Length: 285
View 1: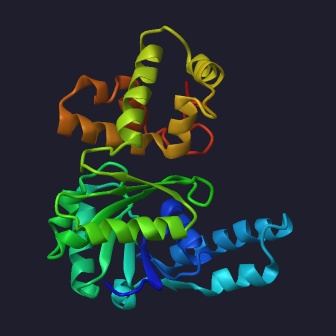
View 2: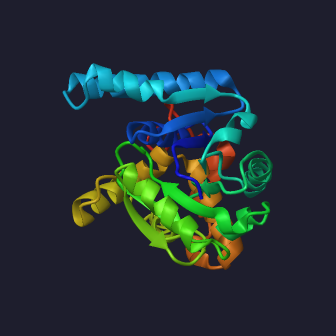
């Protein structure tokens, strides 16, 4: 494997832009790619705003801010990743879309380049099966918001080489993250494997009339010292995303602990699942 100097990030949403930012802050050259250039430019503008806040608080100098932004190359063409040394995929959480992308990346990128997925739940082995380099595919699961959250789960697929996992861990640490290795490719890895039953049970407590959304969140925050309650966290993450992960877990495990409750299903079916007014648990009870 060549020395990693240039990282490609595919997907300019909240996760992809955050990954691109911490990579650029760590000194890597970054190609941030999405299907629409306007989306990438919006992500870079958002990064600029966040970095300027750091300048105002004395955490960065203006010169450092400009150096970070200068390391970012916006792109709407996947072919621009032909020259990168490492790739992190951060598109939406849908297995077929990820596998199609990895097949394209396998064709475009050099044969020695590691392809990492930021998936929060989908099998790395399954994604790697779309490539001719399964030993060079791994998971690299960041948490939202990426510049703030310290954890990265580096996930070993069934065929992931030791050198692949070692390199992903090194890059995560270079980005200032605390890295844990998920040694077995299982849906949800560590954090979401534990988190999803927690969210499911919170929804069932409300469904059964045991407590309200507000009171469940208060109980968890004050009783367990969590910074957010489960419903606040679902609003923040995206109720549709949580539903998709639960549904994926249910299909994989056939375990009722992961089955999406009707409360979650109905929120998604109603379309009231965004972060705008009237689109979350705290605006629609």
